[in-house]
Length: 457
Ligand code: UD1
Ligand code: CA
Image 1: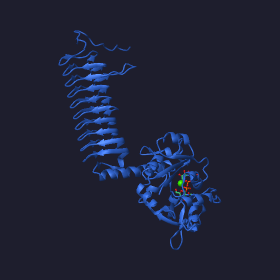
Image 2: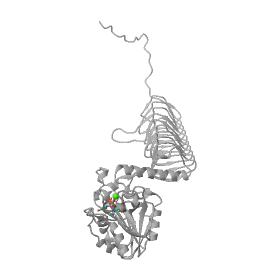
Image 3: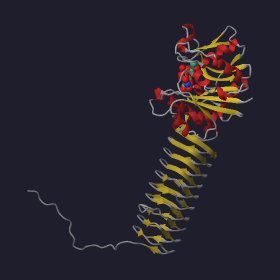
Image 4: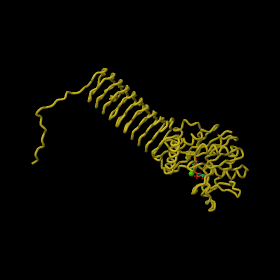
């Protein structure tokens, strides 16, 4: 059985008050449309069609990698009209799965359950019981509690409005029948739209069974129409991710102040994450890692026993086992720290490798540098790697000791076990095991007197 998934993404999203199409707004940094696509792409033997309307170019250009057919709905004449646009992609023997790009948290298990109920003579509908059903289409059942039809809120009688079971819009429909019913839709209703929901009555008339399934959690079927709903679903999604991590053995100091905007690709044991940590992109975390409060970590590999102290920003970097970073450190793309490295406060490292046991503890900038092992970099050391046009490399070999407030004017090499005197501006290579310094001689002026303030008249 082939599945033909139709994702409705044509809505304008006026209530978002935004320049961009609604389905480009993101949850956990991933566009709504991509959430729905990624979920449905996990189904086997599935052909996906995306119905778009507003902002087609920007939508397509930000989703060029999707394996889907893009079909335009020029005018938004209703959900039935939207699905009609996909008729050419539907085979009679398909089971057609209808999804909504602005309903981002729907789970694969729920969809699989729905699909398992559908067949050539059965339509499966996802419904949910809401305490407040206002605004939704109501599920009308007969005395045998079989579904008879869906009534939209605006067309519903006072009696029908008391029904709490509502239409999520998500359904699995036999292809041949769907095509027949879509062609028969009329727009003689309160909103003058072609309602997809009218196919339920047609199914009943054609003796096609209408069965229902429910999601595990209500949030799976909630849509995004405004920023408040976007935020609600962001928090719901983050709470789910936090719960999964805790189940895997991570200690979160506050699950409500944790955000994962990406994926943890490897996770060790006894990881502790303090409050207000944001993990982004692909993150690998070893055993006994401690991430301090307020850290933003993106695309990073963090080794065993690493301690990241509060308020660090880490982007595209590797931190070797037993290293300690922060507080207030910034590791920029291309930073690779080996084991037992210490990077302290107000230190920025970019596109550099730091070998085992080296320490850069205070107020330094290390860029385009290859640093050996057991190097000690004094406070306020700066690699001057840029002349305004080109970038140059600095090489600091094993065992070097760099005194505080030293500038290394690249390209420059500091050979093994060299010592650089504090306050030096190093423009030439420094030889192995010697003390190199460039420092004006200190003088004291005898008899010098401080100026005194003139008396005002
Ligand atoms: C629809 C259902 C209602 C259900 C509710 C669940 C119909 C007629 N009603 O109502 O029973 O309870 O969803 O949220 O189906 N869209 C298009 N093209 C269009 C119209 C809509 O792509 O021409 C898309 C929208 O972008 C949106 C979705 O379809 O993602 C639902 O459309 P919307 O107008 O919000 O339907 P509701 O009135 O909420
Ligand atoms: Ca809606």
